[in-house]
Amino acid sequence: MATTHEAGLAALLRLCRADEIGEAQSRGFDPDDEGQDSLFVVRWQGQLHGWRNACPHIDGAPMAWRRDAYLNAEGTRIVCHAHGAEFVPDTGLCVQGPCRGERLSRLELVVIDGELFVTS
Amino acid sequence: MKIVGLESLVFGVDDVAGASRFLVDYGLAPVGVSDRGGRFEAMDGTAVVIARQDDPALPRPPVPGCRLRKTVMGVADEATLGAIVAELRRDREVRRLADGSIESIDDSGFVIGFQLTARKPFVLAGEISNAPGGVVFRPINSLGVPPPGSVIRPRSLSHVVYFVPDVVKAEAFYVNRLGFRCTDRFTGTGPFLQPGGSLDHHTHFLIGAPPQMHGVEHFTFHFGGPSEMISNGYRFVEKGYQAFWGPGRHILGSNWFWYFNSPFGCHIEMDADMDQHDASWQPREATASADNSQAFLLKMRKKWYPGPGIHENGDYA
Image (cartoon, rainbow over all chains, first blue to last red; front, side, top):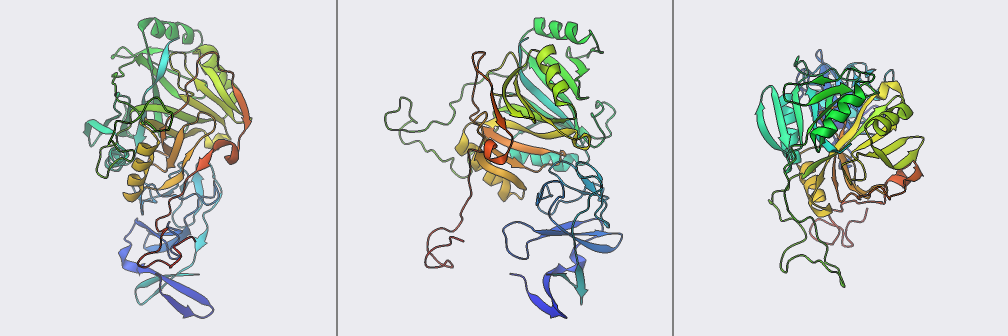
C-alpha cells in the first residue's frame, strides 16, 4: 500500500503529507500492512519525530490506547498505555515508569515536497 | 470476614472525555458523568469511577504516575466492617467517611476502602453450550453468537492486579489481616487471592515487581460468556482500541481473557467463565510463563476461503 522512492541507497516509504500532523499530535502508520501500526510520528516543537511502536519495557508492546493516541492529554509526553511509561517526545527517553532510562527506537524521517517518508 | 469482592476502582485521569468514551465503548453504563468525571457501572452496579487527576478529593496514588487512587471492596454486613476497623486500627489509621464506608491503606501503599456492598442482584443466564448428552441446552432457535448490534454489557467488576515491591508482605496483609485465601500461585511471582465472601478464583492477583513498576497491571469485568466477551472485544478493536494479548483462556482460574491498552496507565481486560472454589480447594503452584498462563490463544483469520481478491487457495499466510 505504501509507495516507495529510491533516494540514494535507502528506500523511502510514504506515510502522509507532513502538515497532516499538527503540533503535539501523534499518528500511527502501518507501512508494511502488518495489520497493526508498526511506527508512529509525533510533532514536537515544530519537528517531526518517528518512533517504532514498541515499548522497551515489553519487547514489541504496542503503545497507543486508541488508534493514533500515543500522547498524554497535554501532548507533552509519549505514553505507553500498557503500563503508563512516559517518554520525552523528541529524545524518546523514558522518564517515568517501568523502563525509566531506556529509549524508544528512532526511525529516520524525510520530508520531500511536503510529503513525509520513513526510510526503510 | 465476609468481603464479597471489588465494589469500585477509582482512577485519576488527564482526559476525562477520552476515558469516558473508552469505558462506554467497553460496555459500561455512565452514571452521573460530567466533565469532572463520574461512575461507569456494570450490570450489578459495580463500577469504575474516574475524576480529573488534580481533583483534590482523590486519595494519593501509591507512587507518582499510578492512576489508580482507590480500590473499594464490598462487605456483606456491618459486623465485617466493624471487624476490619478493629483489625486495621491495630497499626494504621482507618477513616470513617461521610457515606458510612471506611478508608485505609494496604501494606503496598494502595488506598483501600470498604463499604456495605451495593451490588444489585440480578438473574440472567450465562452462556450455555449445546452438547450431545448435555443436561442444560440453549432454548431452541436461540443463537450462540451474539447478533450484530446486540447489546453486550459487563456483568460485574472481577479483579485487579497489583505490581508490588514486596509480594510476601503484600500477600500477608490480605491473608493475615483481611482473611483472603490463596487459591493458586505463580512461583516467585505471586498469589491469586480470594476474599472470604466470594467463590471467584481471584479478586486480587499480586505480582512482585521492581519499584519502578509499582502500580497496576490490569483490572477487568466479568462478561456473560466467551462468545459475548470475544464479540465485545472485536467490536472494541473495530472502534480503534489497541489489543495487547488475547483472546485466549487462562489455565489458573480458567477465565477467558482479552487484554487491551487503556488511558488508565494499565491494561484493561475483558474476562468470562472464571472457576469458582471453596475452602476445600487445594492451591496449585506453577512457574510463571506464557505457556503456563494461556491454555490457548485465538487468532482471527479474516479471509480464509477463496473469493474475490483472494488467492485461489485462500489466504493462509
